[in-house]
Length: 323
Image (cartoon, rainbow, N blue to C red):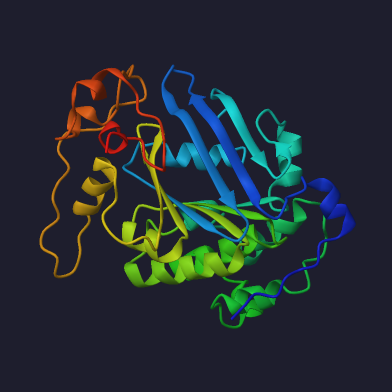
């Protein structure tokens, strides 16, 4: 079942950047440093093309959430960003809060990790959904907002929107958040761990809804199986860098040792016990020389400890580059 698309008015088109048919999001050399000197991102290149979902996976602290928040202009004021984040033809780094308020919802939608935290418990779910158009000065909702809720599995949406958030399940509330984020049919939806608090069945349903609601999606996901099922490409992050990109449908084992270790540490039915990844990832305050994964990699050689591998042929690994 497909969502009914809302026609974009001339005023809406003027508020946002033009998005060409090929590249919706283009990130080049992105580095994010926080106020304490910690480097959350150490040079990220990533592209999301029209109509595709790219999933970011990796351990906690790898930089996934920082990358997502950089794309939607929600980094803390203490953060310093270098590099480039382009939505269509427009550079987004350095925009003012006022400019971002015009663009969020119309050009890029954001689905947060915890739908309960995103809603005021003293107000109705409908109030939360209404903010998606009232923040842009529109007094009346888009004509199809109830249809969108119904199509994403919310029964009797007009009546249900009167409920308080605690009266809804996590999966239902995340669907309402997805509708709010996609109300203006933005070219890009960014979802930061939208299934972290849900069981497997609800998580699958929420990600199915997310793909139906978004033209293009940047998905931060902790579940490798869900990421592979619902995305077109997977980007593996480690210590503030992308170490591998691969098509989700690509057969065979991942190429980067960290990607393979992540896969081995994932529980799977009938596949035996997961294998724990020894050691810990370097923190943002650590000065890195060579490959950040070298200290945990059984294949690391001398070159790995002195030279940082670049992302070449979709993998950042000296061992793979030498084959």
